[in-house]
Image (cartoon, rainbow, N blue to C red; front, side):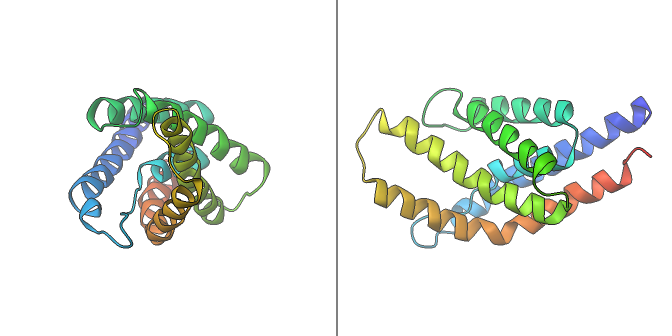
Length: 168
């Protein structure tokens, strides 16, 4: 792949990520069902990690985490950066060792990314406040049920960009 194509591909990935950040910030936070709203940031990292090369997706996970840490409040400083690196590692392991079908792999990685981000959130939050683990897991399940139908919408543009710029 030429350098120009590489730049265009990642510019398109950044635009798709920006689109979903805007959808999350302006639309999805207003959709409240069972007291929670869908959360697509971890799934975006997981889907890109499952479809792209390890180096490129690691840089995306790190950069996306840093940008979110600077703009969106988290439980601790650098929460998104840490959780996205963990999600990247889990997604890469699943995509290279377990599942080879892109769609099913991305759906599994997206689902596990939400669970992983919520578990890390609980782990870091437990240091500051006490809460019922049962309640936290119930909230994770609700968030997962609300976010799972959105995973194909995250997958489609990323897969389309990958297909356009796939090196032969």
